[in-house]
Length: 256
Image (cartoon, rainbow, N blue to C red; front, side, top):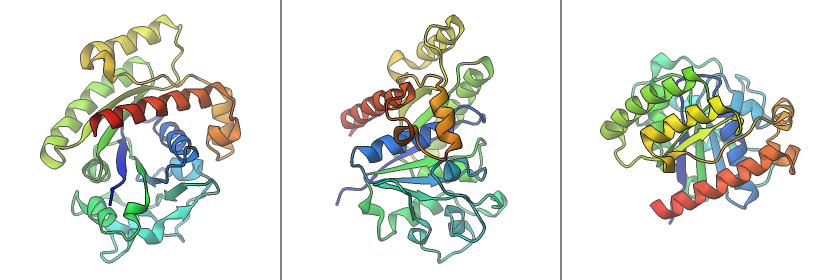
């Protein structure tokens, strides 16, 4: 039976569009008939909120697997209000220090009774190099790195890439970099073009994925706890996520 394709979305810097990317890429894949599971590993729980769920201590979460030895991860899966789109929410009160192993998430997922029901698994991660991120990296086939085109963000990419490649060699040597996603980028702004060109020069032009442009509809959709695909189907950001999804699917087909 074909296993799902797992993609970890990571950046050590906050405010670079991780949640925006996970929520809206997942929605685009789901709209194409792909059974898509989103796992929110970030205790800020922004992705959980963005998919229409208000995180509380009363519901099972992905973080339950780290302190309940016999917890079945399928107990934490929620069906969202959109077809083919599922969520394992985050626990905002989770304490990272209790994680004993970097393979817990991978083991729990692969032993789950519904693991093979999904086509894609997208994992949002905290903006730090900790055990939650390591668990996500070990559980994934591919890596996506979003960034906003500013100096601090692009500097952070370099240190993040070095750290993740080192981790991958030790923990998950089969992990593949899908590419870098420029988020909130003005295509005609010279400074933005300069910074993205620096990323292309260092990692190769082929590693730059299609741009997500600034869009008021994207902000409104986030406030409405709804992916922009379903909030404003004709918005420019919706078109951007369609183009991004096309390219990601093409790259995965070429890498498989």
